[in-house]
Length: 266
Length: 230
Image (cartoon, rainbow over all chains, first blue to last red; front, side, top):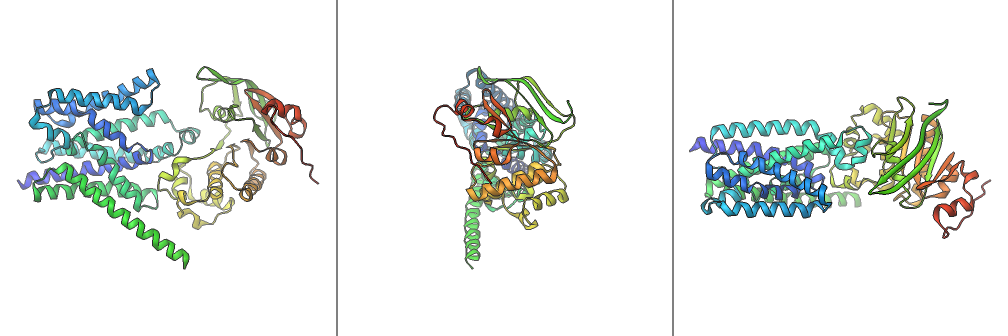
């Protein structure tokens, strides 16, 4: 039992940290909510994984990629806004999933279940998360420049299309990892909330990026600890812990701002 | 490239959404020139700058002097306030050496303490100066500006142009800038390109900016008078 708890905790800390780190890039591009529809897109893959007993991340990944490709193709063909096309594709994926998803496994699909991860799954999740952190760190300055202005990045010789492609693949992988922990419904929160909390507290880019990674990991750790104590599902607990940290960050930000104003008056 | 030229644009054509944005535009720029690109909204001024930077596809010829370095100062960066970024972080994105950044930031009128300020907390005038400094990192020979006056109050605007004139002199720069502001053209530019899809006029401002050429450029609603200084 203790061994299982350790595996869940390790998986959570690694996936939570990598999600928070990537989330700091997605938030600065106003793309944090994209992970939501992409999470929904994974539901048919999760349903297949649960029915046939393989890893949900392996089931989820091809469906995220398929979803991204479909949205891109529809956009090229129709010139409709990206958000409308995303809605079409993700709603269809949810509808397909619920045609054959076994009712007794709906909760696992929707809000995740990290309580039964095996040692192989933990090892692979941790390795993939570490690799993601490595790649994100490599592309971080160029991606921030692209987020600031694609033209400015282009004028500096940054291959915007190439970086955007790598970025989309990273999002697809993080969503596929995230659904294991928080299910198809809550993946947006996994990337958006730690980054938002970190933004409230940061004065520079490294504080922001590292802060988002730490808040992501700590939320997962505390969420899984709470799951152990209460027996409630771990996925929603992880998200609620990060929400609590976010609320606390608003309080700290307000306090800091009022202190700044006071010292300005003095 | 002919002697003294830094840029030659020949028969440039740009089409977007099956509409001609720039139609058979030709001009040349000599080293040290300050060229203003003037024209109404939608005339293709920003499109021209983006073509010169190689950011947009085009037909025709754009030839820069071999090995020339170009700095770009964009019109605005609306998303930068969404990112908690210090002034130093912004320069780090360019991978510049701290010593060079310090020297350039000092040259645009800021002390070293300014590095820790958040980009989102800067006034529009400070922000514009930092953008200019950013464009100067890497020691470019050419600077391209997209509407440097946008969002700056009158006091600040004057300072920005004084600053540009000083930088041009100190660093032997060639500048191409887009503006709506005719007074800037007269005070500051050696040449002007009036752009309304085709070139309406091209040459030194006091020679080519006539009531007729401005009327061609902006239509009948344009009131025109020329300041005589000194």
